[in-house]
Amino acid sequence: MRKEDKEVIINSITEQLNNCHNFYLTDIANLNADKTSQLRRQCFNSQVKLLVVKNALLRKAMEKTGRDYGDLYSALKGTTAMMFAESGNAPAKLIKSFRKTNDRPILKGAYIEECVYVGDNMLDTLVSIKSKNELIADVIALLQSPAKNVVSALQSGGHILSGVVKTLSERPE
Image 1 (tube, rainbow, N blue to C red):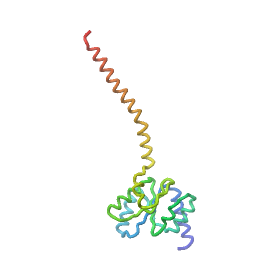
Image 2: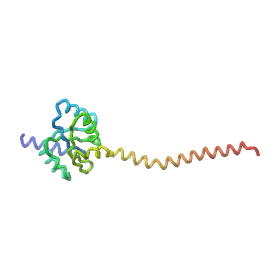
Image 3: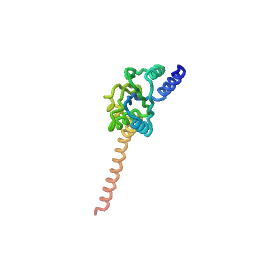
Image 4: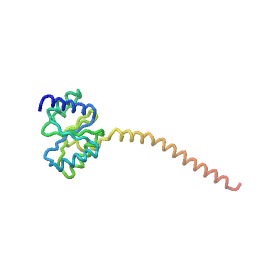
């Protein structure tokens, strides 16, 4: 591969790393063409971008971004496929569901919102991470809960008060 071609690839990967704050490094070696095609189809349906990269080019792209990727550099061995997603847990869920019928992809590492996770044993942790939208929904639900209780109490109090007034008005004097 010519140096110019490598530079184009490095710049492309750098741009993707800068635009996406969530990516996974996986090993999809030993998957046959049919299984790889199934994985790519599931990635497309889950809005996850799958990209097979050379480790040396990925390392240069990661260094070029200026971010601290910590221990992720140690995961750059063997074949590497990157998974990019807007949601931090979407690739982990996809990997877990795909591995119900296959032994790959194996999680090498992940970079989620400036946090580094290394090793396949982190897959369950990554599945349970909530996305930004899920966290916002949880906060809104927590904020609405006291207001709903107040409204509920006022409405039930109104029914009780009208029942008392009705009972008093029907009572003989």
